[in-house]
Length: 267
Image (cartoon, rainbow, N blue to C red; front, side, top):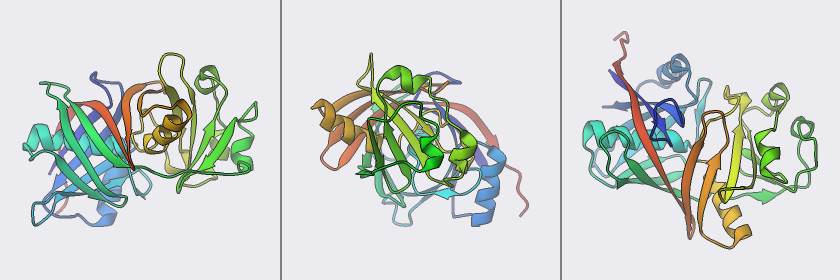
């Protein structure tokens, strides 16, 4: 049973965000998929099955601890594997818990093509205050705070505050599977961000496509433009070219294959 590992949102190995991808003939048992994701010990492992009518691909994402409703970088990684290893028909149409997700080739390249991801906007709503687990991590009062269906979203004063932020990961883990996004207007790009979700076993996610479905609408409104350059300021780091198109977010990112292998599973 084949498995691939891809560095997403980068054209260079050992940067961006790694994800494992398995293209299956049919779904494995949920417990087995969770065990595989736990063994991989990456932020996400994606499992993909082609629909019977060949209209697209159903996709599911697992962290080492549980299944999640949406993962952008593992969707990009899956599209890259379907394009490079399976010569899938383009554009590649995925169906996940958040709805339809489309990925198309943007610029061909032998090693690290770029892809255009078409994702739905994830809404955010203002909240009066952060939970105490989060609030204690901030030396200064945030400029604004919001909540999505699974993340807290915090706007800080400047890029230095984002880059030097040191959260209390033990306290954040008490939020369970909810994550914390921090962001600000960038010095050299339109906005920068970081993303922490220790309750899911991910202290800091290197580059996160899904959070940009919330960040892009926010910064498009704040900056008065729909085309935005973004940087996720993790240790591995990653750059994303983004555009707000109605109730969809388009993200351009590269991907490069790191590993191709086989799993030996009991029948």
